[in-house]
Length: 318
Image (cartoon, rainbow, N blue to C red; front, side, top):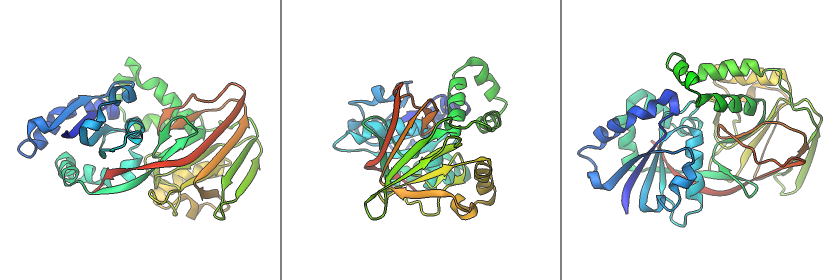
């Protein structure tokens, strides 16, 4: 068994991953034997690439964004002996790395300091959430406005023209423009929310059409810097559910980022709760995204989403 697999997403963060391989080799030179680690570029279908492959490593270091990490964790969840996860945050949002203090270390001290942390291998437990019998995620599931923005970005990111433009402007700037483009989007149907409350009983909430979005979050940081809940603990077996009902609460997301305060401390009457089991029932078409990646798993007729805490993984932290 080898010690580390470095898995680099070459298109993350203005394609920063393409230039990372030599820096990693230089950073571990003299510390790791060359035959104790491998470096690979990720493929579009990362889960297929990693199946029956990750069991050969003690640590998998993902150089990419939240979507790349989520796909790797999907493979790790099914392994009997799970490798630890390291992160080199070169994505657009980097919410998981931000929540765990990894992003701050990387930005303030650089790759060399982060590689030393990875080799020390101090870990934190992070809950893994599952969507029915389908995909898993560590960060968030977004339904509505934020998913439409993410889907638009995902559709554009692989186009040659968009890649050229990204050399001049940041991905976050494009996210901002897409947010303005979709500012008036609303979900055009009623929705029923059922969840297990603190007494292990089921509460049901019926909401009329016109919602901006529903956020199911496990990380303390969302959308590149917004702290959604002051109650978030990434290893407590629970996740936070936040319902953004109108324009004012949508604007408060930006206020929370600017003020560096949790959304639930600055928004009165915010519909937010914690649970380990959530079911959403609705009819009609809307947008869904998981950790920044488009989700198309809804049926044509009845729409039902079930979210639960299904497992956990160990992530290397400072």
